[in-house]
Image 1 (cartoon, one colour):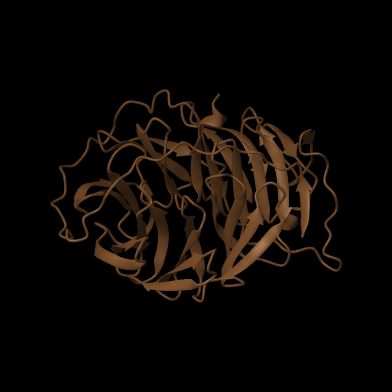
Image 2 (cartoon, one colour; image 1 turned 90 degrees about the vertical axis):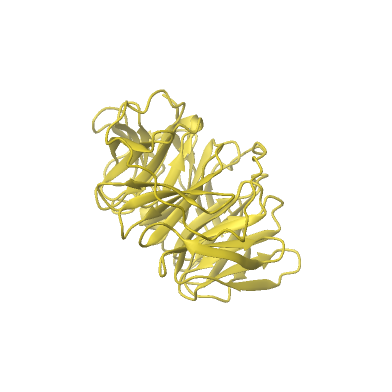
Length: 390
């Protein structure tokens, strides 16, 4: 295991607002009236978007107020997952196509990530202006398993090379900021790393196939993994080291823990449903239609009792009531949506669209598309951080 760059620091995140779900309610509510097609510009959301571009192997820092990409950071090939440290300052980005170092397992040392340097070619990150200059560390893109960005300083903070573990995609960080988990499709498991040094601590086998998205309980004991190839969620108990397989709908893709931590919601792309798993009994408590075709990702609103679900087949985002499971709204989009995140104040949802090269900004209250943001060749994963303010 080789670590490059300075180790990260982080603080415990703020407590989450509790929410409940009624398993008995599985009926789908009538769709709401169509939202206005155009609204005012997104407004003064305090922060910026980190958007992954798998085609170019980059992470973009996007200012939605100006509809401008203000920085580009190199990642490993085909970046798939992005997660924030609890304080939102650091972004951890996984590379699906990274290659472990050959022979002795050691990588060429990089320059100190605290001092950004101007580079040529594909080695650095662009910042400022239309094209900008290149900033970063001198590490071959193929050697970047996990890229850590310092969003406050707008520079690469560290690069982790997690031993032999390849095909990294889903990623999450513990609530205390000390541990990092990433799914490895090549190993059919989850790699646990030290979030400060990048040292590999454990490989947890899921017992399923095609692990993708994952989540961690607030106390750090349970790891939840969607196995899209075997139609189940694996729950890994880090204390007893005993995995539990929970059968759910067909081809689970995205998942997220409800704010209270008592439920795990899963988007099943194969049968167009949402599964709700109780985290205490570890069983599927409910399954109901997602409101569209091919649900791929879902995200809980930070203050409202709502979960937002993206659908690649029907090109829409649906809004579901967390308590009843009722469909509250359907928002049609110009192209297939993927990942969903919210601004810190909760006023806007941002949805990536790989096919269109855009990120769609949606007014949460009015349920309407307000702007289409230019975001690289094929924007995929994205997250909002207040540390990206301009």
